[in-house]
Amino acid sequence: MLDDKDRAILALLSKNARITISSIASLIKMSDVATKKRLVKLESKGVILGYRPIVNPRELGYEAIAFIGLNTEPGRVVEVAEVLSNRRDTTFVAIASGDHEVIAELWARNTKELLQKIKDLEKISGVKEICPAIIVNVVKQYTSIPEEFITESSERESASS
Image (cartoon, rainbow, N blue to C red; front, top):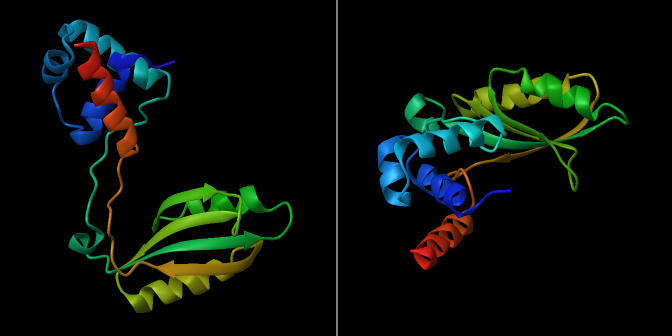
């Protein structure tokens, strides 16, 4: 279970994953050593999975991004998800409930390449149906945790001070 200090650390990291341990320690009023121990604990427990940059695909030359919903033949969901996760052009793959059994984010250099990649997905053994949603404009970029978590953590930290 996370306590208020852990929540405050996560809130700070979600705003700036490059923040120093000393800065975190100062802001949450703990020693550097205690803060480092908490970070290591959050990492070892699998709360923090990693530290990655959030990038603009278009600035990297990827003009066509799509979320692809895939439906599979009975009993093939995990197999299809694993095949997708091993592709070099997917950035996210999940098994889901609802309209589609598997959801994947796929990047392509242009629309023509994206359409070819979608056709290639149809050839994956076990895939029954593909429903692409091509991203036209991103209104809100990924956040590492919901903003309500950050707000709640900030309010808790202010109340305890």
